Length: 455
Ligand SMILES: [Zn+2]
Image (cartoon, rainbow, N blue to C red):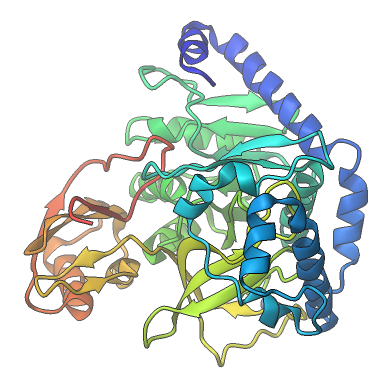
């Protein structure tokens, strides 16, 4: 929504806002699930993830994508420059001749990378880019269908049906920020979503949220873990009763912290399932019903490039499903942990990721200039935290902001927090803890784990 549209929206009565939310919802539904989707969904559901043959399928898609990308001036040049033999048997070895592609490089060469000749029905996409590094590109309709088909395969594997009413907690400002009166939700009728405002979740409003969940008998909650955890914190603190039988909780868009998962599960009495995906379509990871994170090998070609001597890897990927904007070996800037011994009892042969650690530039710099990432580990042993953030303004000290729950006992929890922080950051850096009532979110409503002035 453009600025002036937002201003008009703000002034409308709630019923008209509901109408507009539904109107936008209808447009999205039409685009996402129009002709072509059901065929794509059937095709995706017929892919046999339980057989290693899925890797042959993946290789042939990489090959086809390389071939087609000769229509892109940028890729035609790169494929030639790095002697990539598209006909070679070992196509992955050929692909890996190409250097890793950064977001900056993509931004600089955007027009040369794009291919628009085959499908005139292209859809404009803009990544969220919470630090300002947002990216605009195009995707084909077929790609959008496939992406949603893969996402629905994951949802259905958990038992969620297409027509399940969804309580959605995302970053959209659907209730004007200045509103200090409810309702704090709008109804997207065509999308069958009750869209809750994540910006209005407060100690004084949380009961309203619970009432709606109960009244509408919502069984599926989906959205940002930071928002769901905040609401969950208030529910537990105020001992509110969630009478609606919550069956499914799925989260996306942000990394999931341990304390968030515990809190959400405690408040709603259902397991939280995690999912990783991005608009660029270079990687997709879904949690199976047994709680393991599997790579969706049929959707993209995902590489794990070692980051240091631990089990952490850069998440790099190739988006063979999007013909309009080919990306080979694109650096997502995200980090994952892999345990090579991990196995899953489920039948999915997709590789297993132990943890999705989030953004690579979320790190703290120590006095000796060393950079330490994966900082969510600091909060692993704490339970009574609603929100947390690490702020660094110089390399001598960090500030840990914490939004406490009532049950938080300072002397106990602080000791645990400092102990964990010292384990990861060593003894030299000064650690300050500040208790706050809320933590500022990004313009997309996301909660950044680390805010650094010096990186
Ligand atoms: Zn599994």
